Image (cartoon, rainbow, N blue to C red):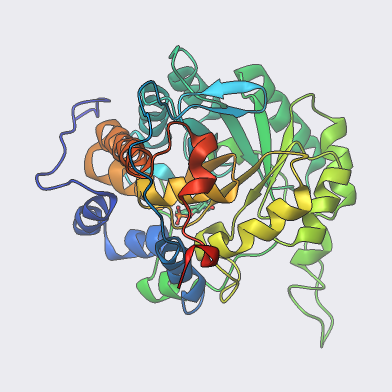
Length: 375
Ligand SMILES: Cc1cc2nc3c(=O)[nH]c(=O)nc-3n(C[C@H](O)[C@H](O)[C@H](O)COP(=O)(O)O)c2cc1C
């Protein structure tokens, strides 16, 4: 049967993002589940991400006027209905036959931003056509890894510009894959019909035989790994703003701004790269301090509740990206499922704002319970 965009219905009993997660697990094979939900190595960072948001506590303020409140934020010169964006995630047709297109339709309808992965399993032009016509849509960004084939990369960037993407997100925290032990245990492999279609035709660098004692990583793959100098090259080939995703050290944050980054995304790749690095909720304040308001700082990793979004905004984030829950919604009910996930988060955010006396997200910092508030 040919898949249609909105024909899927939600399973019964799904009221939260964790309900979506539980249902998605039943729908996906063990191997795809391990790919989507797994983290690197012992998955310590993966668990820390969700835990860290939960560990931040909120303090209600009462009897404040809330009428006319809203979730709007300003981001890169635009007013967004709310601060939610869909994080870049590869191979979404593993979750649903319409994959990234279904995600795009849902994100646009819910006013959420969309960051399309370089490793999307749908042509970027199709995703842009699904997303851009919606008047209430958020921003449409394209995520890049710096590929050694610079001619190909230049053409890819030109394609994203022609298709209507509005910014590039360069992911800098994954020069190599993390140790994805859960995936390997589950025997995950991409099925033949799912591939990174936007990278077809890219030339891989010639492999040179390693001498005895040489490292396959340091003397092989990493000889082509990007460095700070490459940011200038990327900026020289595009008019689009370039954000860096995966910057977590304050010194790197400053260097990124010196290199002309238009914004930063504090991310640990959802715990999929370096295990035992801190949760993003823990890393965010130091990056914000270093950036000192000179550029927007977004955050992702472990956002599962509207209260998590409020906490991220209270710490000073400009917006948040949501990863795995979108894949869960997609697996459960295609575009309908993704829309439901985004809707739940936004509704929960509004409830959290009302209960902490925040009329707008500018009030959010006052919602945090801090040590100064008492024992
Ligand atoms: C299945 C999967 C694929 C991903 N693929 C990409 C990718 O292609 N590029 C990228 O920058 N980040 C990728 N990420 C990381 C996400 O963009 C994001 O940083 C992370 O999922 C946020 O954490 P959360 O899933 O806990 O919300 C991927 C994450 C998952 C779960």
